[in-house]
Length: 368
Image 1 (cartoon, rainbow, N blue to C red):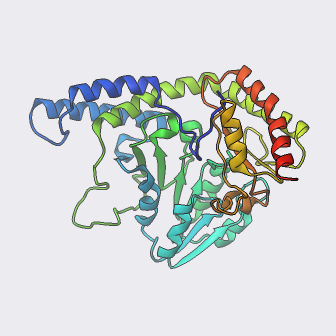
Image 2: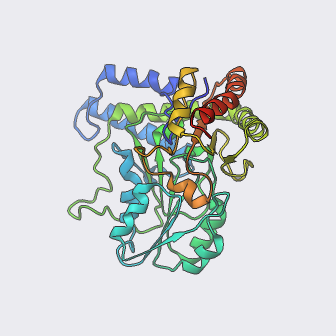
Image 3: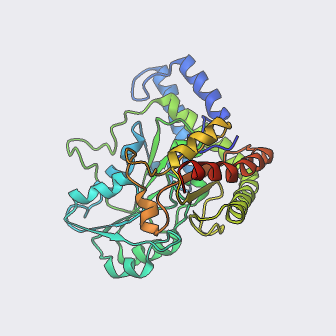
């Protein structure tokens, strides 16, 4: 099955995580902060999971905070930066909407433009950055799969000593942390972990404070579920093993899709360059002229393909994608394809055999 979800792939829980999750719920683990033997066992398991995740992400266990509200990790990480409410907030035009919305809380906000391939304007970043700036950068975009050169940007920000927040929602651990960073966001679902766990990384060498309460030394609400944390750790280990075996194969399948679409379907924009350095291996976004993205998704669903659209051209639909708009490519007739581990080449070929005819038929029905 060729699958794609709304921005994040909608991947099911990894089997390794599922196995641990079921066992954990069956045991009904005690509160790790409690007293007694059961709580001590819970603390041991929690610390082991923290160490396991830290090892895979390349950080120390003390730099990890678990959150039961993954969508809040990036906004809170940014608002906890020492100069967020006094310095300049710098954010890319293709960031998630909830990150762009933080502009209302910052005294000054600058949006960094992207080029036609979705890469942030390096010269503008250099011009705008100040030592008291707070910078938010996606490691990769979940809608287009476009990767940012975060190692280069990390060096630029590091030379100024500004706060650098990195969002790994789309890539997960496929992209390693650069040398310089301040905070980072790794939702467990980015590696087929449970959707109810977010990982906030807090660099031990950077200043940061929980922005909503000064009455506690805690750095998070600690409202997470222990079984979900254990499942997230197990899923990460299993998913990385799969990714090591599957990433090149899936990248080749995405390259095949890109080549066939560009050859067989006229008036189509394909987001990004497709190169290994500038794109994730499993995500592809296309936009077709004179077609409704919503109708295209529905037509493919009837053929058994679960895909998603970032925008639609019908009057009652949601606003067009701000990501595609910033890149200067078509914002209607959009299709996002996200290939999961284990996808069959035969399914991809069937998808490619059907797609040109479906688009031609929909264009004909719309009078294009």
